[in-house]
Image (tube, rainbow, N blue to C red; front, side, top):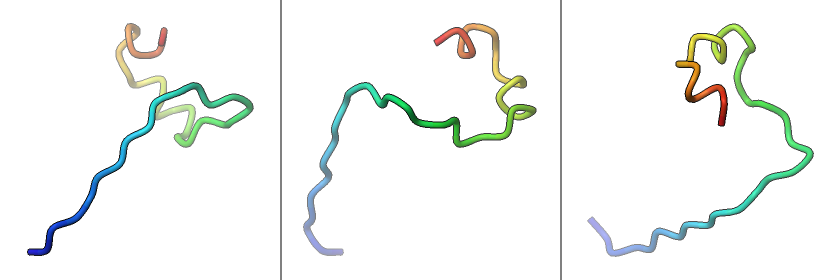
Length: 35
């Protein structure tokens, strides 16, 4: 293995679409859908 870096960013993403099918999204628990 070789040493490397992991970079992380957090923030809001505006005007973006959901990257999952609506049917798959609806299988999430209600608490997750409310996020």
